[in-house]
Image (cartoon, rainbow, N blue to C red; front, side, top):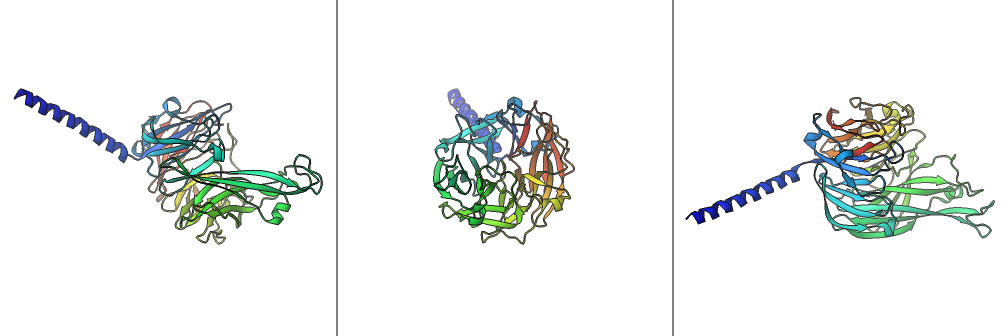
Length: 443
């Protein structure tokens, strides 16, 4: 009798433990994690070359100013020789990474977010280095966290029979051949889906002047899912000498359009509204919203714009959203941005009046509305000259709320939550910093 009772008690006890574990696992899965990323100093303050660390906190705790986190002291070290370029799943439960440079450059890995410094490797790793090199530029397409896309461009100056690329004389320069490589990666199964190389010429007139596409980045899938848009930066050589020409006229903004998922038939489209580059830097530079793709440009002599590409896969030049005009500044430069599901978003920028800090020009955040084409500086967030946003990467979106990090180089700061519907700003958890390092966003 007592033996049977003991067995019953033992069975019940195990059942309770299992139930408790299951509930804890369910709570973890239901938590909307906000992963904070920091870039450690390498040789100089704000260079971010000392590696990347991440730390996750619940959305509730991220909005609590009594909480404090110190990723540089106890965060998870992301595999990457230099600043990692991270991506997150739409629910925040998974972090994707492709190592940048070094012995592990080009290695894809993903992690399940478990809270604090706990990021559990999941799935298989794969190297895309044989296709796109050890320092790939890549982002996650917005297709339900299924696909990543990495790109590169290589260039070669072409000359006639009387010259060589190393010995260019008058009338020998012909054009610069730009070859684009595009790879799509199955994020769920760690498989390479497709890889294609293509030539991406400009117009004959532009090429005769020495212009060519020198960098590409930020592939974005259109609403129909049948075209991929890739941002482009242009450079120029002096046709008379074949040497780099840095004082050239900035051409109208351009984007490469190609078929998806085949990655074939690339064409180049040109804006008549914006000038300068559309490849961005380390943060996603264009987003699909309400059937169109909205894209930031950089280096525009008239200040950065947000441009629109319509469902016909051409620039919609009736859409004019100039940040200089909207913010009342000069030489606005969009560093990073992200809209929420309502078409309102948060934008990181600098301008001609930005102070010079320890690592570069001071940055600011603005609340924007894609439909109304308005932008307003977020004054509730503190600013100082060392608030550096050039390397800013991530904005965690939770419904209509967007989370950002605010911390000057080498100084403590806070997480801030911006409710894009109302503009309400909530000061959240403290971010503990270390000398020369800075925070590069939330995911």
